[in-house]
Image (cartoon, rainbow, N blue to C red):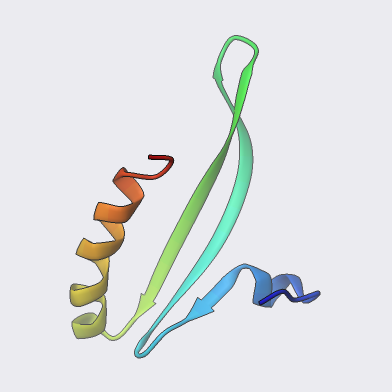
Length: 64
């Protein structure tokens, strides 16, 4: 679902947790630039304990 509100476009609210996303162009090597995405989680410690291992697994396999 799209939104014109930048705050809504960079935030996802879940059941007991929230993640805020930001992106920044960084130089990876010489003339190669990549977009680095940062995900900042907040919320109930029990909800995050369930969520974060699943997120880490998915984030490691990004692009594949």
